[in-house]
Image 1: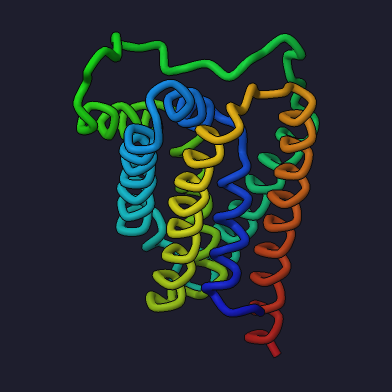
Image 2 (image 1 turned 45 degrees about the horizontal axis):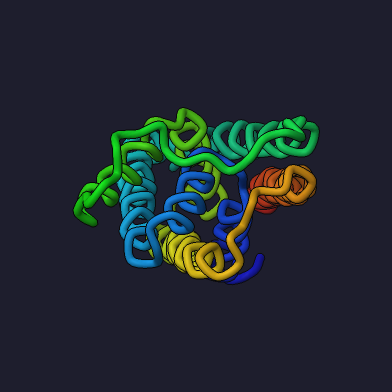
Length: 216
C-alpha cells in the first residue's frame, strides 16, 4: 500500500479533472470575471467538499470498524467507485455543448463573498458529490481499518489537490479562454472513468487482502 498522502493526491487529481456543473461554472466565471472572483468560487467549492467529507466521516464511516463491516463497506465502496468509473467512461458528451456559467443571479458588481456562496451551494446541490464523498469516506475508512491519522492524511491530500488544481484552472481559464471543446470533455471523461475504476479495484483488493491476512 502506498502512503495515504500519495493515494489521496491520486484521488484528488481524479476528482479535479472530472467534468461537472461546478467545474463548468468555475471556468466560465473565471473567464468572465477574472482570477479573484474565480478563486472565491473555488474556495466555496472546496469548503462544500470539506463539509461533506467531515459529515460523512463522523456519520456512516464510523460503522466500518469491525472486520465484518470493514469487509462489507470496503466491497460496497469499491463497487460503487467502479460503477462511477464505468459511468464516466461510457458517458456521452453533447458535441454542441459549451461551457456555461451558473444559471444564476445577475452578476453585476457582486461581492466576492457571493461567489463563495454560489460555489458552496452549487457544489452541494450536485447529488453526485454526496454519493461520491460518502462512498469514498466509507471505502477509505474500511481500507485503512479506521486508522484516523491515515484517513485524515488521505483526505488532506485529496482536498488540498482539488483546491490547488481548481485555482490553477481559474488562472489557466483567464489566460487561454477555455471554450470547453466537447472532444476534450469526452477524453477527460474516459480518463476519469479509468482512474475511478482502478481506484475501486484497489479498494476492494486492499480490503480482501487485509481480511485474508487476518484469517491466516
